[in-house]
Amino acid sequence: MDKDVHFRNIGLTGRLSGRSVSQTIEQLIQILSKQDINIVLESSIAQAFAHHTLQESSLRLLGEVVDLVIVVGGDGCLLGTARALAKYDTPVVGVNRGRLGFLTDVLPQQLEQRLAEILSGQFILEERFLLDCLVKRQRNRIGSGDALNDVVLHPSKVVEMLEFELFIDGQFVYAQRSDGLIVATPTGSTAYALSGGGPIMHPQLDAIVMVPMFPHTLSSRPIVVNSNSEIKIIMGQIKQAPPHISCDGQEGIQLAAEDVIYIRKKPHKLRLLHPKEHTFYEACRSKLGWSHRLA
Image (tube, rainbow, N blue to C red; front, side, top):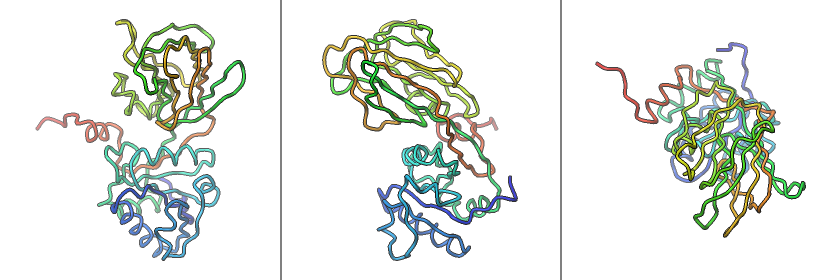
């Protein structure tokens, strides 16, 4: 809780995929307008709310002009916002209009109450690190990306085993034949990596997990390493369609044999705000269907 916090310029963004998102953004505009707060709409949604005559900014520059960004939508929408805003150190809060809502954890029916608490400094602040991914071909850079959840090596259109070698901090770990590899942050440990059999990692852990996807060996298991480690993947022989490396499920970079993939911790972090009652374990109970206490 921080009584000295002041959010005088607030950015709004979301994915207008349904009426519920538009209704929530409209509600936010009404609430914030009454408190003499300068509202900045992200460009992709500005036209839908043109009747309010509010300031507009691209997502890429939003962090330069606001003190706080409110994301309305699902976790996927917040992932894109996080990748764009992490370099600005601008805090982000998510209003859940998606499914699970591990990151967008403010419930729409509690919006006015939770927003009042956040504006008065009553919130929990978490810092989540991101990953940088760089792909080189014959020592030349051919692509890059960043991810809050995960960097995933996967086949493209043809289902086939991939061959690659894994190095951590320059040390050879193994050569593997599998459907691919998920490299996830603690934030991403409850996403794709979880469905692949990876461990659930507390967000405060400073670690990265590597989860093999259907490895062609019974002894291959997830590996957890320090987040400051450099992860290097060298592609082996490719028989059919070129595989891809994707960041947070975005359009991937097409790979060729002997391409080298470098994955490191990004220097900037996402500053994520939660309601003051938030706990990670309660989120797991409610989102993953864990049992509650016995009566």
